[in-house]
Amino acid sequence: MNKILERLDLTIQRKITESPNNSHTAKLFKKGPEKCAEKFGEEAIELIVACVKKKKPAIIGEAADTLYHLCVLLRSKNISINEVLSELVSREGVSGIEEKRKRKIK
Image (cartoon, rainbow, N blue to C red; front, side, top):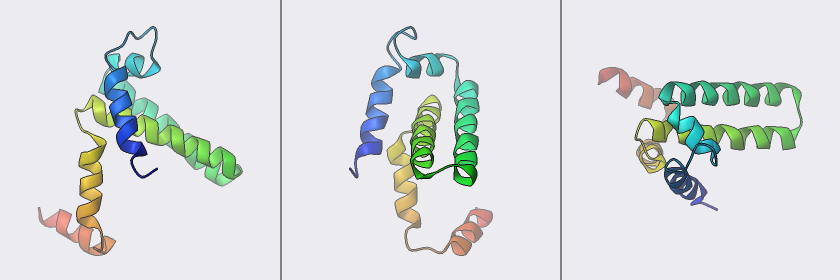
């Protein structure tokens, strides 16, 4: 299960080359990063609403939708999920306060 985001990213890479008539991923990708960002934002809001108003199964479903659309958005900017995961690894064990302070210095 720990490689599911990497497999999702590979699937997205493959799907973006397909016909937009056959692939939701290709359709989003063809519309550009702005549309991908918009769709990610919609899904993130749906996740927030689910967390406030709905039960666990709905939250899990919305979280999965949000992760998928995040991966599509990243790919639309030519960023792999592994780049993001590497960034998380570099932050592991660093307090949020310390990590935020370091970003301000850069």
